[in-house]
Image (cartoon, rainbow, N blue to C red; front, side):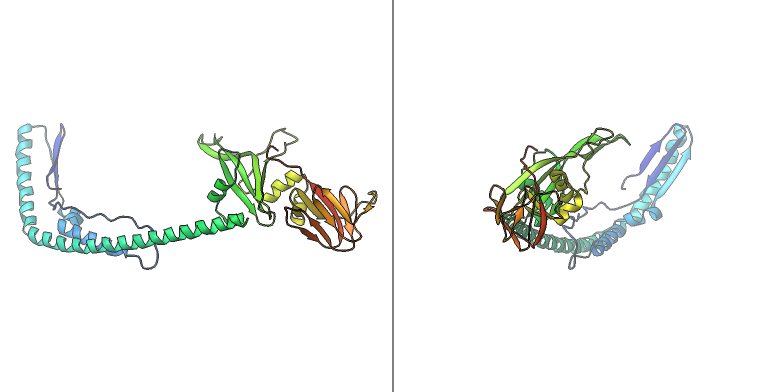
Length: 339
């Protein structure tokens, strides 16, 4: 401070003073990122501290002059204050003896600071260029992934923009390469029961979507089933999975999903055929329109099929499914985006 700070109260008067140089300090911009080859920030701090020494700021406690006079008499207070100002003036003269030298040293130090600032700007520019290149490469890689239907390689923000999820607020919680599916849950902003603060929480609605091998997009809403005791719908969790949503959609056990193969809306699961089921011998069977099952010695009814030879299920717009010989059951979901 270059001027004394004088505090007056009814019962006392006090003064506080330390002589310092006023200079224009150089400010350092933030680092864009940290890594090998970056300018050493400790060097900047060292320069700053040395400048503070020459301005008198770093020795504030040693040079700080404080005094207090307890009295309500204005005459005595003014006399005391004049004496203290004489002391402050003496301190200033003593400090100014080295003023020219200190200013010269500060100019040299600030030249070093300017060099440091230039090195940091070069560092930040190189980092920004690298980030821009990485962002371009990432964007191109994600565009390629979407073109090839490998959307599980994309970020959440990209998938939010890509899939037409029918929720204002949604969060991507699961992606499955095996089932070529992604799961978004609907989110709402609500008041928390504890602490009375707002929080974003998932609702009981989700959206299961994906891109099939043929490049065709699909998607439909998934509602959590009602709780039998409370007759209310539970909410989804942020760690919910595609498989859990598929289990609800196809109304099957979760374990069955991981053991099944999918072609469009149909799941194929290896399981025994009940003795009561009457099978039909047919080497060419359509489970649903254009989902054609082919195998020598194929037998089936409406839900089950078997063959002692390899089985192929073909569809004009889906990738064919190849199954080893055995017994199977089909699970069909007639989905649309209004489910």
